[in-house]
Image 1: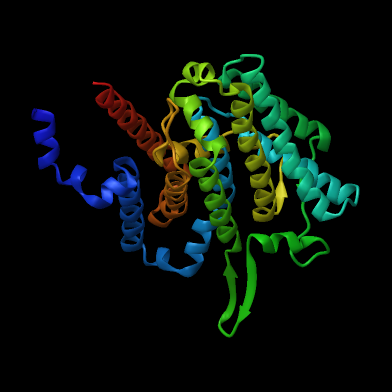
Image 2: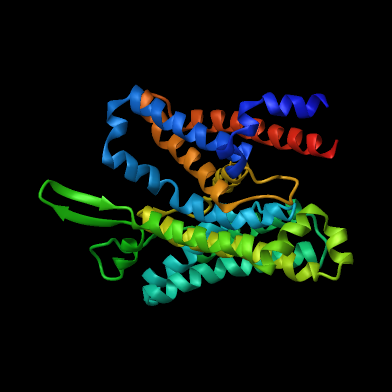
Length: 340
């Protein structure tokens, strides 16, 4: 009786907007608005259009990784390899383009396929071999990091610039348009991110694949006993994660001029943090692509905004750690409340 009475008196829980988007996502949206407002007030320079473009630039490759790893986390698993797979796919496909004169279009496809291959391997190790996702993807992290360095002979890779032959692929993510006031950057990658987010949101919420992947996270054994091919759908979740890591590799190559072997470790943490902050349960069984994007943009605003108030990126990691702990604690508390 006391719980129901408390809920009736709680304006946050009974707010129709909060009910529609979910409490955790509503908090994430509010946090995003507060952060953006804070940086805008603290630094007038933050309100410039170029800063807005920088925020979107910082969200492309993290956003693509986050969309894919959302599926792995919803199953109750994790994919720690997406950051190094991103760099590995960029290094290999970039080397093919610059040293072996493979057409850029083919290299972009190869980059995505490399990510898909690692995703397939991760899925098979988890679903068929029965390895814990943490161990399986940790191994893939090390393998992809080493393989990228081996393939490039530990040398940096420079993809063609937009003004060079083959540099057209950079326009997929950002177009430099000449105006009367100078050049204006059009963040076309943001549009691609939203399009793919909408598609994968439909996959998650409206298809059999999405329902079974979610069911795996809720109760894997019950899902298996109900006749669902657990191996198939769990593998597919990791394939999604790997494929989007490959797509992220393409956007990463378009964002940066030079790629260095051995990098990528830590990028996966930004993506996973964005997923969890956006409301996806680390225990599995629940998550949304919309929430993931909100979490990613929180990360991007932090990364872009902190230097404007005199703080460097290490403070982003410090603050993100606190936010991540709070998000996971809220998820655990919510699950305990529902179980009572």
